[in-house]
Length: 499
Image (cartoon, rainbow, N blue to C red):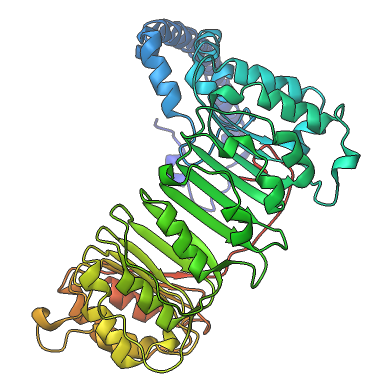
C-alpha cells in the first residue's frame, strides 16, 4: 500500500504540523477499515469453527473404530493389557482406562471376561480404603469362567502367630474373597507370606493351578500344610524364603508332585541357608521333566553319585558357594544334552580344576554366566571357552581386574577359525575394575568381523571407565556398547506395590 510519506519511513525525518494532521486523518480512516476487517475475520472464523465442528462430528460417526465389530474391539482391548505383569486397579491402565473412553467401549469392556482375568492385589493399598475390597471381588466376577492370574502382596504379619488370628479382620476377609475364586486360579503369587496367612491358606484347593510363587517368612512345616502344592497340574514353583530354616529343609518337605514340575526357583535371603549340593541332586533326580532350575547353595561337599539323565533341562542357575570339584562332578555325572543357559557360582578352589567337558556334554549352551571370574586361571578359562563353540552370550563378574585377560583370550589371534567362542554376540562385564584401551580396541576389531554385536559394562568400579570419544569410536565400528550404573530404589504404597 502506497503512502505519500513512504520515502521518510525508517529515517529520522520529523513531519511538519500540516503533515502531522494529514497523517492523523489518514490513520483514522485506516483504523476504521481495520476494525471492519477484524469484525469480518471474527465472523468468518466463527463460521469456520462451526462448519469444522459439523464436519468433525459427522466424521466421528463414520470413523473406523465405531464400525469395528465388538469381537474385534475385544481383541484390541486384550492387547492393551500389561504383558509382563498382572493388571492393576488404576484408571491409568487397561482395563479400567478403557471403561472411561465412551459408554459403548465401557459396555464392551465390562462384558469381556478376558480383560478381568488378571489382577494385582496389594493388601495394604486395598485395606486402607473400604470400597476397594468389594471392587476386587467385582473385578474377578467379571472374569466369568476364565482362568485367573493373581499377584498378591499380603499385609506385613511376619511377627504374628496363629493365636492372634482375627477372622473378621479386613485382611482375612480379603483373603477369603480371593479364595472364593481358587477353582479358577492358574498363575498365583503370594508375596510377604507370613505363618498367619499360610495357616489361612492351608485348606484352599486350586485344581487348575499351573504356577505358584511364594515369598515370605514361613517354616517348612507350615508350607507343608498347603493343599495348593499337591495339585498335579502345578508345573512352575518359585519359593523365596525369608525364614531362618534351611531352604532345602523347607522345599523337600513340600507335598509336591515332583515328576510333573518343569520350572523351579528356590531362593533365600539369609547367608548359609541355601541348599546342600547333595539335595540339589535329590531335586534333579525327582524332577525328570525339569526344564528350568535356579537354586541358592550353602555349601557343596564332594561326594560320589550315580549318573543321571535330565533330557529336558535347558537352564541351570546356581548361586552361592560351591566347590570346584563338586561342579566337575555335576558336569560329568549329570547328562544335560539340551542345556542352553548355565551359571557357574562362586567357586571354592582346592587344587587345579577343569570344566573343559561342559561343552562336550552340553553342546547347545548359548548363554554362560561366570559369577567370580578371578577364580579361573587363564588355562582353565581357556579350556572352558574352547568347549563352547555355540556360545552367544557370556556374562562375567570381575572384582579382580581380570577383564583384560578375558578379552585377550576372546580376541582372534590369526583367523576366525582359531577364535574361542566364534558365535559370541554379547559380552556383559560386571564390576570391571580396570581395562587397557589397546586390549579393548583389539577385541572389538577382531570380534566385529565375526558378528559380535553388544558389549555391556554393569556397575563399573572405575567411574568413566571409557571416555566419550572412545565410546563413539567403538559405536562407529557397528557395535552397541552400554554402561549401566547402580540402580536406585524407592518405596510407596500404590496399586503397583509389589510388582
